[in-house]
Image (cartoon, rainbow, N blue to C red; front, side, top):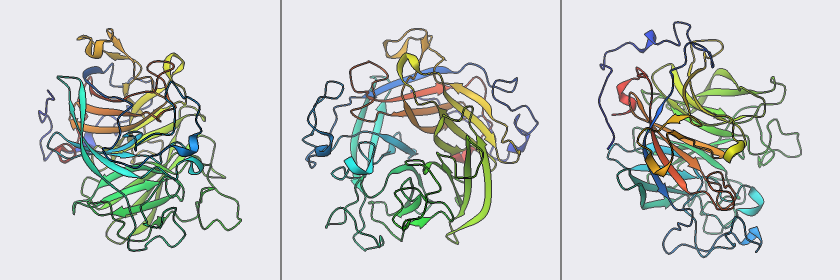
Length: 395
């Protein structure tokens, strides 16, 4: 079971953290030390939404990792964002479907509610909701006449829940911010990022895109006080130094970008990020990864960053390819590897425990067992020392 001990008083000042004192820097003495696997649960790759529509018709009919498309239903897959609900359940966001705008028109964008059982090593799917635009907030043509949103309309990669129970979702095709109701209904027009357009942007109108394909809002954090969003691009904007990613600030009350912006520098220009979540007012966790899987994977890391520092003071809190596993959880050895191509979900469970999930890219990724589609794995990781987080992020 998860430990939810509170190790930081509500009145503590997070400004005294190590990163703020100048001990950041990946690979340096500010790193936390080796983290430990404390929970393992898995949802089989061949899990489908009960009674759902067929999908995968644009994938051809040749087997992929032993699975032959098309599929009789909508797969419960591609977890690219997570929201902690506080009752042992989580909302998880499926991404655009099968990896691209051209092959995902029959994949319905959906938020699933799941409950991991770390004693049994299983994950239950309790339900969920599809995303839709019945009120016509999207002004360009959608794929479906019923205005259910598909992977050909948006590539959704990050999600947070506002204090009013609504959700904000980060998209890569615009990139756009999407505001939806608790049942998935779009509440207002998609919000564009000023001066940045991806190749799939419907308003590109023949102009050159300023962002690479599928490089929009991959991570997004909500401020602890609920007033701001911090969407983070996965790719470098044209004209910016190679391997740098923009973090922007969005004011939820005024519905505008504030103009504040920070720059995250990847360990290598070919790396990408998977998720971002607030630790307190100034500090955030970021998943950084390479594009490799299985034994070839080299970089699957979680960094602590601090917006008060010019270089963000990257501090390694967990190397997901080198987790201690003294209890041999999941049937693995004393060293546990999370070797997936895309790892896109991190959530703070208590001041020393993180939940981490993979995006299994069904049916394409096979990082755990070559030749077999990856499952959706949910692990819990205990850090070597406390985050000194604002307790509101895990209460």
